[in-house]
Length: 133
Image 1 (tube, rainbow, N blue to C red):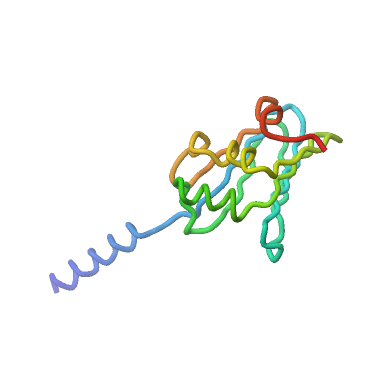
Image 2: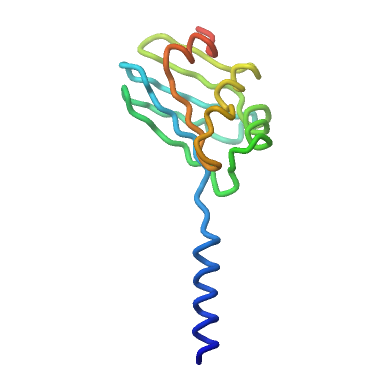
């Protein structure tokens, strides 16, 4: 009976310790106007993510349980998965499709945890990384 209790306790601990949370991209709108963000993929089979983010709010994209924002995953995601990132502020449209631009967004500096990447949309990021359409 004692062995059965120990076995159940060990199984419970192993189950709790193996729980995983999905990797996410958190996009924060630091501007005082609504932002629309569209992320399109190189594999056209996947539908693009489209987020409407209210001023000074944030939205989140859940990627899945295998997403961990280490250097290898970040490089793979920005260079082989993401095609173009579109940003619309009021009537002004911007895009980001170069490797340099995507490197600014999916960088080590934006990693908050191994499972979360945070991109803050502000005038500095727009001026540095995005191209006006």
